[in-house]
Picture: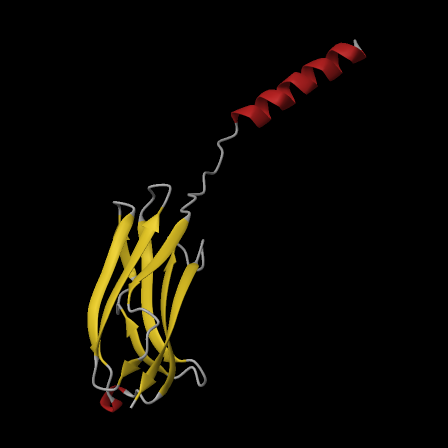
Amino acid sequence: MKFIFIFISAILALLYVSCKDEISVPIYNYTVSILQPDSLPKHLGDTLDINVEFVSHTGEAVHHINVRIFNKATNAEVYNLPVEPHVHDVTGSHTYSDQFVLSAAHGLSEGDWVLEGKVWGHEDSIEETTSRVEFHINP
């Protein structure tokens, strides 16, 4: 009798575990490709073409993006867009394009600068992926 009770308890435990709903967490497998600018030197007064592609290789939505430009030595930020990072592009791909004049009025000066593209999932820092391009600005 004791054996039958243990056997039935084991079967019920297996059924309970197998019937539990699994929590699915999307796997985005994001990549960030900075198509423009390149790493060639720039000059103050140039117009910087910005073209960054964000892709989910599993077809999930591209939820949040950010593109920023900052000084490599001081981390002084001169560009940080879009204002609302939640783009929620359900196609699994999103391209960000803009133009930015490299001028002292925007806080730029001669030196080494970084353009960084970042993408992340529905919640902050979920599968956050970053790509960077460094370039030098000449006077």
